[in-house]
Amino acid sequence: MSVTTPAHQSHNSGFVIETTSVKYIGSKKKLLQPILGLISRAGASSVLDCFSGSTRVAQALANNGFRVHANDISEYSRVIANCFLNGHSVLGEVDKKIQFLDSLRPIFGWYSENYGGDPRQLDGKKPWQLHNTMKLDAIRPEIDRISESEIEKCVLLTSLMIALDEVDNTLGHQAAYLKNWSKRSFNKMQMRLPGIRYHALASRVTKVDACEAAANSDAELVYVDPPYGSNNSLMPPSRVRYGAYYHLWTTICLNDEPKLFGVNGRREDSRDRFSSAYEEYRKDNDGRYLSMIALDQLLKNVSAKHVLVSYSSGGRATREQLMDVLSSRFTLTEFTRFDYKKNVMSLMRSTSDWVAEEETNHEEYLILLKQN
Image (cartoon, rainbow, N blue to C red):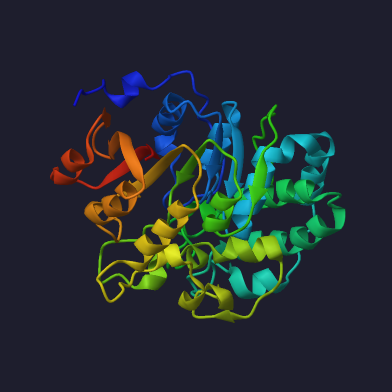
């Protein structure tokens, strides 16, 4: 088959790729340019992002004129999506409210009791220093009091999460905290107006299982970026659960003071038994990963003409297993490989050519398909 030019040359350099969010494992921030290019070449004008996560892809799509449906089962993802996709409708007064919240006098409350650490003491392993959790304790209930709409509340909560993310004591997830305080944790958190853009097209935000989202979407293309975990069989499954990774954002959004467990104070509902099928690391009796079975079920619900799949060479399932699922329903039209040590390379490949290639580094894959 013919070979295209490298992706950084062939993809439209006019895309707006600036986005804003919290730190997030698996974020596609570095892949926005090729993702937008592939979707544009597919000719789609509307996109369902089934696993929106930190919403980087959904934001980039909306910023570039696509009609977007952002979906995720996580409450914090719903909040962030509403902020950046629909927040332009409440920009009139929300900046003043952010300034008011940031000026509140700190108090000692539930968040400080459970998640605030004193750098003068050797208690260690807390997500934030006490001076920032005391601000959180003052701000969080006021958000519920002053919000005049759900969208406005989402903007205020997103501003709060981003401010806390800038002063955290983690390596990018909340399943564990650093023993020694990070340099940024000594800074004072500051709420600011998030970088919200105006979108002419209305965006849809849902919080349902990906299968349900796909079955009820009229988007021309479905973007699938499932939580593919790790192919390290020794890695504890709790280390690849997004409910555990970002339990603090869930708690701050819900403000429900949940029952906690473990040394890191995780929510009770972030235990392994509450994980999604797409995060499953086990196999069935036929040796198939349960996550691939879940992905196959999702694809059965897709009526869109095109599907774009993100996957990783470090994922739990092999690419052969992945392609067994994809090729049963779709035809591969374009494949993009992203090597973190090299430039993005874009190649037109048949399924057999790609599967037969030897992997030498950790790579991310973008697989564009069309209905058979």
